[in-house]
Picture 1 (tube, rainbow, N blue to C red):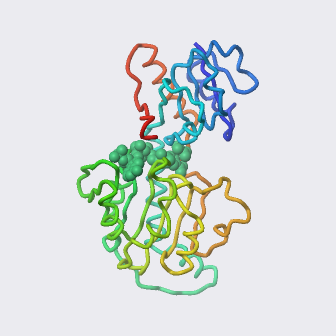
Picture 2 (picture 1 turned 90 degrees about the vertical axis):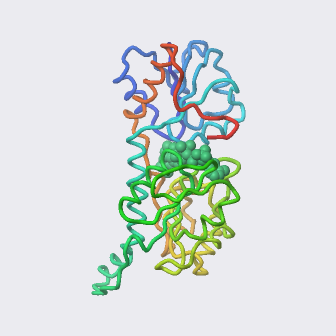
Picture 3 (picture 1 turned 90 degrees about the horizontal axis):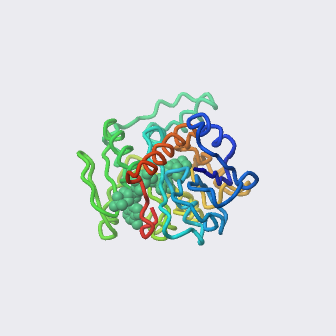
Length: 315
Ligand code: NDP
Ligand code: OXD
C-alpha cells in the first residue's frame, strides 16, 4: 500500500516526515524524484498536481487535498473522473480560520490601525468607539468555516448573517440563501467576510457591483471587506477603485488573484489595506496527516470515506 505526496508549493518532505512519524508502516513516495513504480500507488496527498500525473496512476483509489479548498486539485483538467477527492475538515484548521476572522473583524471594529498610527506619531486621540452590536457582519459561505466563524462573532455581540447556496439554520444568525437573496444580505452588511470556495460561480464575485450593494449605514459610513477564502473571487482593481472612491472603508486580504502577491501590486502599500500572506488557516502537516490517515484506515476497513467533495459543485 503506497501513498504518494504530490506537493508543488509547500515543503513536501516536511509532509512526508509528519506522515512517517504517524504511520511508520506506510510505503511513502515523493513526487517527482521518489515515486517508484506508479502501479504501486493507492493514495495521493496532493496540492496543485501537474496535469496527467494522477491520471497516470492505474491503482489510485483516493486523492486527498492538503487543504479545505480543492480548487488546487480540480484545476488539473486531466484529473481521473472516478477517483474520489477528499478535503480537509479539521477542528484545528477551523479554529485557526475563526481566530483570523475574529481578529480582523475586531481590528477594524476597534480601529486598531488608527491607534497604531496615532502611537507612532505620539498623538493622544481618544476617539469615540462603538459597540459590537452596532456592526453587522455578513459571511459569504456558511459551511464548516463560515458557520464556526459566525458562531464566534455572535458570541462577541456582533449582528451576524450568512449567505450560502442552500439554506442554513444557525441560532442567532440570519441565514440567506441563493442568488435571489444575495442583495438583501449585502444591503444589511457592514463587514463582508468571504469564506466561499473558489468555483466557476464564485470567480470574481467580489467586484465593484457587489461592493456597491453593501450597507453604508454602519459606524464607518462605508463597508469593510475581509477575504480569507480565495483570491480568484476578488477583482483587485475594483477593490482599489472602491477604496479610493470611499465606497469601501477598508479591506483585509489573505488571498490574491496571483500568489505570492506581486511586488508591484498597489495593495501592498494601500493605506486602507491589510495584507496577510495566505495564512488565515494554515494546514499543519501533522494534524492534516492525521486526518488523511484516519480516512485511509477507514477506506482499508471498507468504511465510507468522509468529506468527499462533490465534483459537479466543485467543492
Ligand atoms: P465548505 O464547503 O464547508 O463551505 C462552503 C460554503 O460556501 C457552503 O456554505 C456553500 O453553500 C457555500 N457556497 C459555495 N458555492 C456557493 C455559491 N455559488 N453561492 C452561495 N454559496 C455558496 O467549505 P469550508 O467552509 O471548509 O471552506 C471554505 C473555503 O475557505 C475553502 O474552499 C477555501 O477556499 C477557503 N480556505 C482558505 C484558507 C486560508 O488560509 N486562506 C484556509 C482554509 C480554507 P452550501 O452549504 O449550500 O453548499
Ligand atoms: C486551504 C488553504 O484551502 O490553506 O485549506 O487555503
